Image (cartoon, rainbow, N blue to C red):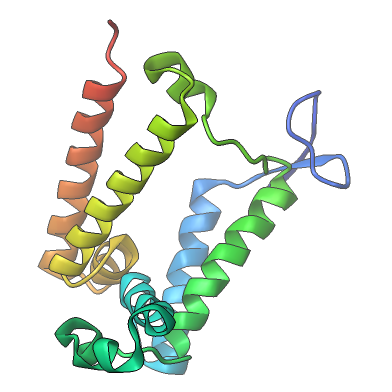
Amino acid sequence: MSLTAASGDARSVTGIRIDWTPYLVGVGIGVLSWLAFAVVNAPLGITTALSQVAGGAATPILGADAVAQNAYWKSNPFTLDYGTLFLVGTFFGGMASALAAGSFRFEVVPPVWRERFGGSPARRLAVAFLGGLIAMYGARLANGCTSGNGISGGLQLAVSGWTFLAAMFATGLVTAALLFRKA
């Protein structure tokens, strides 16, 4: 992390811009992964905890019996454990990082989306929801997400982790090329 004086762009509360270097962040993720294995004997991962929280959130709506009878939620019951704390910590850690870097802003339609696809908030939210739904379905189908398969699997030198990372980057490149190509 380097501290540099801001020159009219994103500023933190202190007026100093914090640039997160990918090398330091990479080392931090590696150390976090080691700590997770050492302390709780579990890899980094988000989707299992998100599934557990979804079951907990569905209980007041669908009823405890319906959630308990659902095969998926039965195998992933809501618990307040390391995974849930990691999920919540990821949100607040990302928020703290954006605030510290002076780059936090709330926007429904980012400028890059507006330039390419128009300024409709409904369209943007619908596509974001659909993309999140597809990503979550794929992550659960693969039995892990970017952090579970990619980071934890890659750090353990698992073939599945490296295969996932290669497929994720290739898919990201193709998707970006298709969505943001010149008209």
